[in-house]
Structure formats: structure tokens, C-alpha cells
Image (cartoon, rainbow, N blue to C red):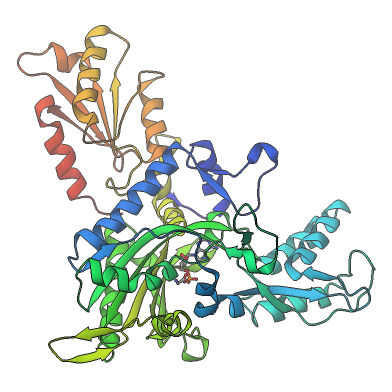
Length: 489
Ligand code: GAP
């Protein structure tokens, strides 16, 4: 059987839309750039991945507790964290008109004009350069180079007298309160990372959850970034979801803890069902470390757009707690009674994008297989995260078969996400579930209900398409065994 893996991101974008995993936001109005909605299957997949993470981080560690902080926070948080000063995007000024433009949008406009003039090849080349801006000499320099090389002129003045490209802040701003005057004093930000909600609640959690260092706080929630280059489906979004955990440790034990968490997190990706050879650790070189980090590494996945970060592991030192300690005037220290020692804990952070993980799971599971001269598209997802776990089909629309199929559906419904389907040929029904990643399909046929003794059904396994005939009473056991023993191919 010939098997093809995913080669092009567009294939996943089309499947995601056609099968109800992911849609463009506000599509009927032409869409909103880099914002996406999850459809029925996508919602289940995302929820299952979120639960898989939550279970691992909180249920399996008795010293990690959960938090659900608000998206809006006191504006001083973002001064203390360094985001007001340093969380930026590139802008360029036209020296003739003194007008300011976003450098990426300027290039986008030029691409659109090229297309309008029928210069598709040139437009494609430029689009490629824009999509990879930041990978050569840094974002500002790469964008400046594109503008210079392609002689892109200011849209209004027509001049070609640009400044250098400089950075502008990525945080979304909004006004606070119905009586807001619109002054800068009323500005609040949509959080660009969930982590700060954890730092500012460090003392609350330590006091109320009676935790002692080392301990962790885990959180899942939305984050917002007004991204410059945002056109790789759900890889780079303006509204996205993060799953972050901050592990508070005694200074001096941070390096060991960092190594431990890096390994633990890599193992989690494998347990999620991602193939090992598509994962790698990419340590950040010392000169590229963020201002707060003593050590950092990405867990990368080989997407169709190349090796890219899914998760970041950072040793954030005592930077954040010290900053909030200073800006708020509240002591964010820990007193170790046994050692009679007071200190600001160091933080090991694990930060993973939920949407990037969804995209990784879809890309990794995608296969096209030649079966009897036909092509089947199948998502070989880990059964634990599959949006639908069991498809239940009566072979044909006859009472006897429909009744037993409904009985099985009712019985499994409480514990599994099940789908009853009686429309179309059985082959078509299998194919539909293959595309949705459903690992098990149960078919009720006459052989099973008319033979002597207990009713039997066939259970068909998505990955190799083999089938077993099993008594109805053994279905749960078979599904559970198969789920536990599942391995990615
Ligand atoms: N608190 C640390 C932090 O936010 P980050 O590397 O900026 O670190 C962490 O983000 C993770 O969030 C990334 O590894 C990525 O998976 C996800 N992420 C960041 N920006 C994103 C975006 N624009 N769209 C989707 N996911 C994003």
C-alpha cells in the first residue's frame, strides 16, 4: 500500500475547513486576518489536547496547582514585565510626508498591486520573502531589504525616501470603563502571554494553596498579539491560546529543574502521539536569549512550513518576581523555614501554544493511502485525543440492526464521544470517519444479531483497516485495550 504524508499546509487548511475543524473568523464578511474559529471537530480535538496537558501538569504532579487569571490586568503589570517597553513590531516612515507605515503591510500592498498587474510570479516570490522575513538578518533588516530591493514607494506621496525599519508595540490596547475619557491613563492591554497572571498571583497561591518551593502554577488561556507576519494558518495568530506552567524553585537548583522540565515536556509530546523523528529540541544560543532568560530552548516540530517552535522552555531566573516586587512594592519572597532562608524564587517556565499543538497533531496524523485503486485520506490521531472516538453504524436501515446500534450508542455515550451514522454505503461511512480521525467503527450486521448466543458486531480499526468480530459485552474492553496500546506509525 503506498502512503503519502502531508507535504503542503494548504492540504490541512482545506481538510480543516471541509470537515469542520477550523474556519476563518467572520468568514461571511471576508474574514479577519490571523483569527480563526474552531468548528465541531476542532473544538473536541482542542479540548482533548488541553485536557491531556492539564492532566499531565496538574493531576500527575501534586505540587502543581491551577489558576485561571483574567485577560485584563493592571497596566503596571506590563510595565514591570517589560512588554510596554520591548514587545514590538516593525514600522517605517516616509521622510517626505512624515507618514508612518507598518513595514509588512507596505510589502503586502505591493504584492497586491503586482497581482493586479498580472505579475503573479513576482508576487509569489515576494510573498515567499515576506513569509520568511525575520529568518535572515532579523525582522527589521529583512523587511527593510525587501522594501529597498523592490523599490517599494510610499502609497500616498509616491516617494522612495524611507527611514530604517523600527519596532512598534504588539500589544492590543483597549479603554477601561464606561466613563473612559480615551486618555492614555485609561488604557489596558489584552494580555500577550498568560504567564504574568501567574507571577502576580504567586503570593496568593503560595499562601492559600499551602505550597512550598518547589511548586508550580499551571494555566490555560487566551493571549493576544498584533502579529506582523501572520499568515501561516493557526501557526501565527493574533488571538491564540497558551498552556503555561511556572515552576518556582530555589536559586541554585534552577539548572537541574530546567533540564528536568525540558525532558518531561519532550516526553509529553511523544505521549500525545507525535512521531519522535518529527520532534527536536532547539536550544537558544546565548546571544539570542530574551532579556529575562538564563537558558531557553524550543521544542520544535517539522511542519510542512519547516522546523518551527511549538513550545518554549525558559529559565526566567527571578526576573519577573523581582520586577513585580519592585513595581508593586509588595514582597514576593519565599521563606524556607527548614533552611531559615529568605529568597525570591527562580522560575522555570514551560509555555506551549494550544493552537500550534492542534496544528502539529493534524499535520502529524495526516496520511493519504492507496487502497484498492482508491485514495483514502486518514487522520491517524492518538485515540485519546480523537474528536470522535467511536462510529456506530447499522449495516443497512433495518429495525433489528438500528435497534442494536442505538443500544450500543446509548451504552457507550457516557464514556466515549460516539457518532451514530446510517447514511450512505458502509465504505463511505468508514471514509468519512477516517478523515475525521475516528479510531474505531462498530458495524451491526445480520450475522451478528441472528446467530446463536450473544449478539456480536464488527469493530474496524482506522489505522490498518482490519476488523474483529466481538461480542457486544466486550466492546469497552477492546476499545480500552486498543487505546492503551496505540502507537504512532
Ligand atoms: N510566556 C512565554 C511566552 O509567551 P513565547 O515563545 O512568546 O513565550 C509561547 O510563546 C508559545 O506560545 C509559543 O511556543 C507558541 O506555541 C505560542 N505562540 C506564540 N505566539 C503565537 C501566535 N502568534 N500564534 C499562535 N501561537 C503562538
